[in-house]
Amino acid sequence: MSQEHHLMSPQESIQIAWGKKLRDFRQWCSPAGQQSIRDWKTRRVEGAIVVGKTSMIDDAEALLRSVQENDNATASNDPTNSGTSVSLPVMITAISGVESPPERDIVIGQPYWQNIVVPTDPLQRVVQLRTTPVTYRCQIAFFCSDPHAASSIANQFVSFWKNEAKRGFDVSYDLANAGTTIIRESWNFRVVENTLFPDKIDIGVKTIYGTTVDCLIVGLEPTVVGLGGLDDDITDTGEPDGSIPPGLPPIDGGRDPDDELNSFVVEADVIEEATDTHTRVTIDPITGQITESHIGGY
Image 1 (cartoon, rainbow, N blue to C red):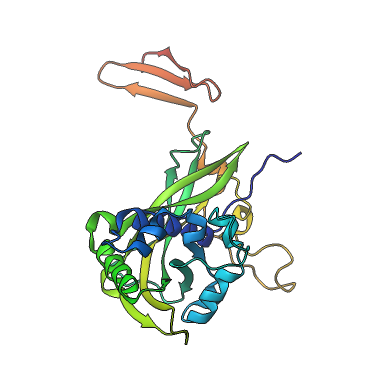
Image 2: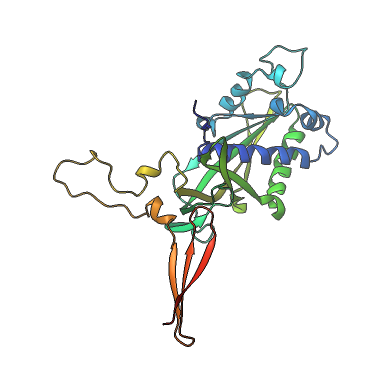
């Protein structure tokens, strides 16, 4: 039976990291004397922060409907309500990838292969890395029955990200399987401060008030080859066999083969003319033991 585990996609990794930051905001913000915000802060997180679909960005009614699709009573640990009841206040979030990359003065990528050793790789193999700058648009919508609470959350959410210690956060990327474990590495993302846009929303229900806040988060997405990942064999290794018409010259790849990346010298001669000595140094590729042998005069 295969022991390989599902590797999260980059967007799944972003979603998990973003959700953790929203939990951080919930514990950080103040109820400011408003009972509704206190109720939201102390409710089970599953019923307080709900993830909507990417397509729901800018569609307040769809975001609110997404709450009704969840078993909110169970999520909130509330046995007195039916499963689809909506407990206000509630925060809903959606994330969408942005096609245009971030400005170079914000994030600089590394498009060339660089030889590295991933610290979390148990085999400590020499692999190759390149990075791509990426941008994600994140939106939160906060619905409640009190307009003052809605405004307070929007203002505090903007203030939260202006705190320099809060603006950056780590995204843990899955790079490859290593037996029963997953090789992961964290990369720092940041909220672009001048992209925080709060706004009021109206869903046509007089008893429900809402606000949204939009922002962009930017960072680097790593591509690592040499760890035995699923896509290693067709990432910059030349055009795959059978993928081009017969007789058409193939385009070669630009990365180093794995066996060359992890090759090393196992025997070397050290000659010192000043002392007229000749020494042979060998290393056992399995044990790493180094042996020196005197060969004779130069």
